[in-house]
Length: 277
Image 1 (cartoon, one colour):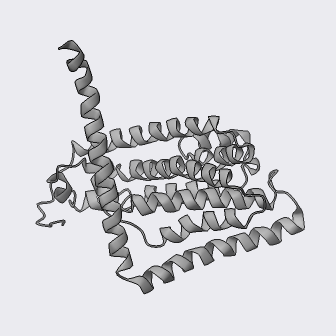
Image 2: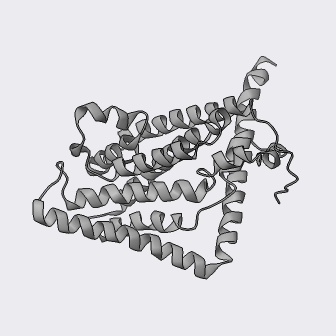
């Protein structure tokens, strides 16, 4: 009897994990179908985002041809950095498309429809939308990787393993600052600032930042965990450090989830009659 009692929490955890895995899969497939209904719009945004990223690649090519390395990074390092950040950012917004709309949803009282559903509110609201242009960001990283010489199958596998925690950290960080809408009302200015800071810091070589600034890149604005550390792992093929990145991602997700639920206690219904099918 005692053995059965001890196994019960494990069985419940497995059951909940499988249920949420099915939910995330279903939400993803629904979002994909909704996106593909407007194929022309999808194609335009997809290639438009890749063209935007390619323009920055051309800029770095010209710059590094003239000055050599910047912050210890050559052109291949910068391209790998862009590939990691682009695919991580894209994956975050493909799976959690509402992440940068969370503050608006809270302010408008639109959480009501999610509160009525039997799934976790935080996960449900974030996963209920996908961003079309994010598919271009996601694909861009793999295209860059494929164009680089000496990229074997193991590196593609490692690249994929690295962008998943990067995407989780992006989503968790953006969701955390958006959740401040529970406490301060309109958090759009803070959200926009954090997005710009995180992307800007992530897309430049780590060596250009002084030691006094680097602590921030591994805490408040975790660019180090989505860009610089993954780049070092990818270069060295050190699979052992991949686990560290997943643990860091779990920490940021846990903090973001906790902040959202803390704010949810202060949420006041918007008395809206919306329905989500």
